[in-house]
Length: 141
Image 1: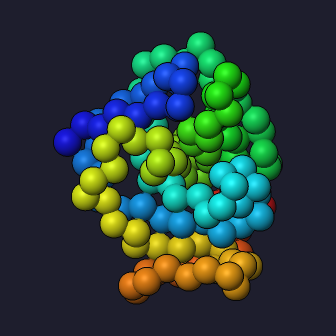
Image 2: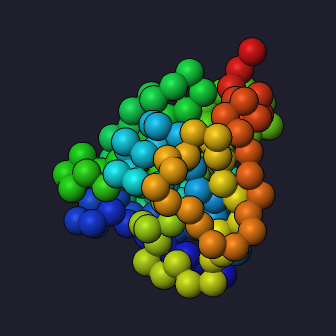
């Protein structure tokens, strides 16, 4: 089922051709600052992600291995994209909250679990990865 989404003001709109069923939570400090809380991202292959309106899109190279896309008008966080060479290169992690209809998507994993603030926890069982495990998977070198 194709899905659509946007920023608050509509200056950035996108569509996703893939069937989405799962989301992951990122507890890293960068995602917490970027989203104002926990970042809930949906992994989408580049071939399945299409920007339909991007006049307000800005890109910020946030690390040696990823960049973040956001609306420069309303400030909405839209996605981060893996830029490092490797099997994940080009993969988008689209913000769950930017989907027009997030129905039917389940939280299945949490990353940077070892640096998650103690003040919150998700119910249910999720796959969990530490900072070291995530960095070994995504970071170059």
